[in-house]
Length: 266
Length: 84
Image 1 (tube, rainbow over the protein chains, first blue to last red):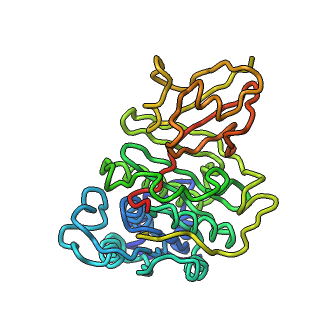
Image 2 (image 1 turned 180 degrees about the horizontal axis):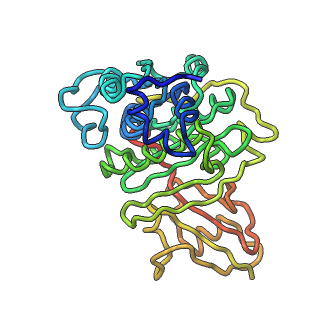
Image 3 (image 1 turned 120 degrees about the horizontal axis):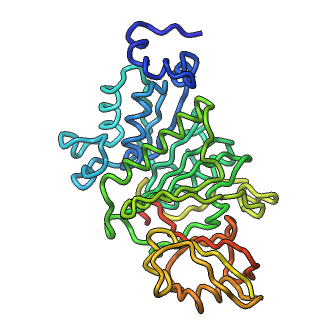
């Protein structure tokens, strides 16, 4: 059993006094490793809360720079960070929140060639990416590697969230079998996004990640949340595993990661 | 006749059939109606709008025949800031 130092006892005291967490749960968090894919709108609140919670190791994936148009919602980054690599800016912010956390930068695109190695050392993946090719690549890699991923997506006033637990619940391809064709769906930069919306969804993702690490509560496996900010409505529907799924179904054919189209960003 | 429950989620609410403002709504159809026929003839959902369609939570094809009591959900495939 790890012994907490005095600062840690005070820092995590509000967790430790929760019977569902306790000292044992806090130790689990400190020993856990979570990979954050995307240091943008979703990765920002998720990263802040996971660092504050004392998740021992956070992997930070992004290969972009901080731009002015990011700052309306990507709260890991500040005006002083304009032009910096996002992983660097995120690392500085997260280190300031909690020096207990080990931060690993992955300043690179996720590709079929590197993804299995990158995800291999993490207990859980938090998908805060912003395009379908990356989401499908991440989904397929997580199924192949048996990694749990916490999925979140945002657009305009709508957010979606679920947890993919390989072999226990569905994966992304169970309900969207193929990557939607390029140009078939609009981009945030064309249609906009309410700045606070990824804050809501990214925080829900962090909540699920912490629950899964602690092994408490009922994770959002096989359930899909849709958040409507305009109506302030959170609806849920069941998402069973699809036996015909190409990746996790009974006759799954995917054995290798190959063609995912163009990756313009994370 | 068969009865189908339809849920149209947030960004698709603008495609709710005329006179409806919320979901889920029930729709009565002739036996043998396919999902595609319901979308085109009854709901008049635009063909060219990318959508995720589930029947009872499972991914569905438009040629799939609907059964009495089926729950059809429609929502937008969203990925985030940069689609392509």
